[in-house]
Length: 185
Length: 432
Image (cartoon, rainbow over all chains, first blue to last red; front, top):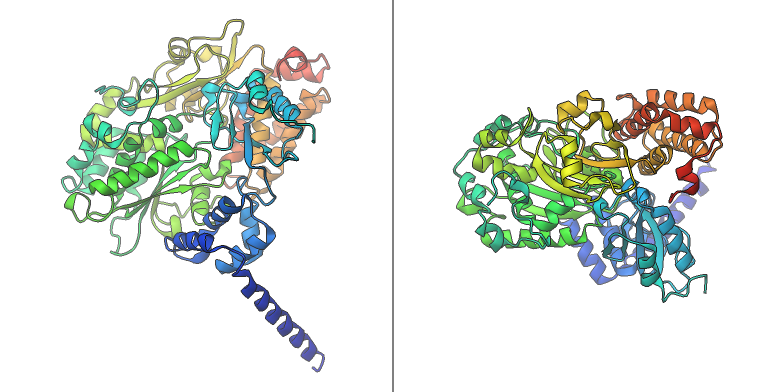
């Protein structure tokens, strides 16, 4: 019996430590982020239902979602950080690692593949000095593959930031990224 | 105003969007004025049922029948939902983007009348994040409708009220599956759900919910305004209405056109897509997106409708064809699709999560010249296991097997050439 006492104390100590850590989490997110998240919460029946919106809001302010941000969002939504992590990592447009100022979404689905997107990707990689999933050292671009962008009559296509580029040629890639040093400078 | 091309009548040659004033000047929101408070929801449902409209997202389920499962004895104060599936991500599909970017109010009007028919009080447009322009236009259109009294409380002075929201997704192909979409809208991982219960009875937040594709909903107000007979008369075959058909691949004029449903494949390919690019021959085509079975040159005179394409062993799917030419390797073509579906599996059930990467690996081996004869048996066995409906939780994995199974059937000599080590002129020296 007596063995149980320290275990309970340890658990209690861990709980109060966690509580202290959690109250610190309130300060992690900005007023603007919290206001935007609360607006989403007001549309849904329970707080955790705003999980994806909350992740997107924080990402729109910071470019990505760090571990600390993730824990703070989970706390605010009254859900476990593990559950929110499961959601965050499910969606390809929630970034759990820092990305460059512009994300390049290169379509590699069938119509773009027929029209040579593999060679196009090689050209972009060569021009920027990064492979798929990587960010240029100057933090300007992150190169990612993406599912069919719904512009197959203009294949091959890619997005650079918010802009859709259609009928992309290697020459166009050269023009777009020509001023970029590439090669890990 | 073109009566026989209702969906694209406001689409301008330069594809600039139609605003509220231009939309109304061309007869827009006349369906809304004629129906809300003047026709009962059950009148509207009857017109829809009589029209024989079938879901344009790929499955072709009769829309009126789908809606008829929504309980109408809803206690007041409890919600019902209408969701527009604008998560267009099926490989080779590019029709909903055009409808939303060129004529956003058509979708909004269709949604208002659809929501009225099922007496939904909240509507969502679930749109993929990459459709930035469409998202902005739809939000502007919703705001304009609020100002006009077409949305919000007491629409046109009646006791019918509807709120409409645009939900921008965070990615993943599986969100296009209706129950996965509902999971995503609830803020969860987008895992599909077992049916029953069907969403019509227990969908978003456990409430009655209808999910329909953009093109389907765009048809609704035209049908209610002009009637079921008019809609039936648009089709060339047993199916009703028009269809957004598209062609991509090595044709002279890739694009998307609204044509009478049942237009022959050859007419779409030759008259609209301009035939094959110079120097390329047609070998086969997927009739309606990446998860449909190959058809070949022997099927060119078939009508593009649900039943005809179904009887030929494929599906009309989204109606946007992907062309396989004679200088593109069929093994590489199929591998690209299977890799896509393997990547996009939600990971919930084993045949999909483990079976699709296995197939992709075997296809890679074959394409790269490491294939063995028994690999063809492995693929055939996987097609049998994964392709059988009921072995997986949703249709993603069976869909992935459609181009694989039919590719092995129609282009077996190409697979064999790779296995025999004879190389592939298109893999080795081509653009891929």
